[in-house]
Amino acid sequence: MTDDPLAILLSRVASHDRAAFRGLYAAASAKLFGTLLRILGNRAEAEDALQEVFTRVWLRAGRFDAERGRAMTWLIAIARNHAIDRIRARPEQAASDDETEFLADTRPGVEAGLIARGEALRVIHCLNTLEPDRAEAVRGAYLGGLSYQALAERHDVPLNTMRTWLRRSLLKLKDCLEA
Image 1 (tube, rainbow, N blue to C red):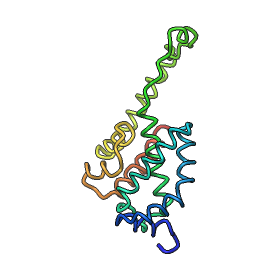
Image 2 (image 1 turned 90 degrees about the vertical axis):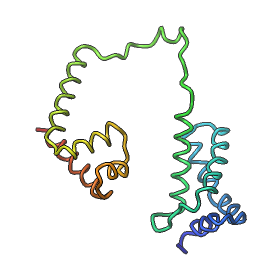
Image 3 (image 1 turned 180 degrees about the horizontal axis):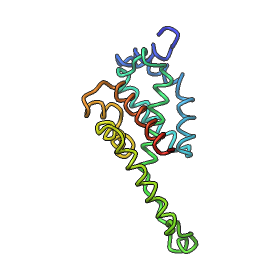
Image 4 (image 1 turned 45 degrees about the vertical axis):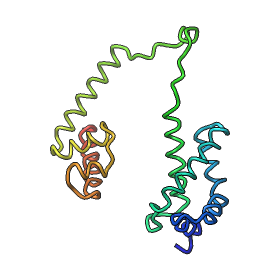
C-alpha cells in the first residue's frame, strides 16, 4: 500500500479525515474530471458529476480494498459508473414531427426477419445442448443481465465456478454455432 499514495489518503478518508480528503481531491480531481468530461461531453455536467463523485468517495472510502487494486482505478470506476448513471437518467429526446418525415424506416424486411428467426432457432438449439444449469446461467447473464455474483448465489456455487461455467458454456455455444 505504500507505493500507492492515494490508497493511504483513502484509508484516512475512511476515518473522516478532512485534510486527507482535501489531499485526495487535489491529487485525483483533474483525472476524474477528464474522465467525466469525456463520457458526459458537457463541462457543466461534468463539474456537477465530479462533486457527486467525491461525495460518494467520502461516504464509501471504507469500501476501498488496496489488496484488490490501485486507488486511482477504484476512483475512476466510481466516476465512470456515475457518469453512465447520469447518461441513463437523461430524458429521451423526442423528435419533432418535421424531423420524423426524413427518417428512414429502420424496421427489418421480411428476409431479414426470416434470417433472424433462423439464427434465433440455432441459438436455442445450441443452448439446449448445454447442461440445464449452465444454460440457465448463460440466459441469466446474457439475456437477464445478472452479475456473476448474483448467478453464483442463485446456483449456490462459488463465484469462480460460475465464471468457469459461463466461459466453458460460451465456448461450447461457439463450437455449436460454427458447426
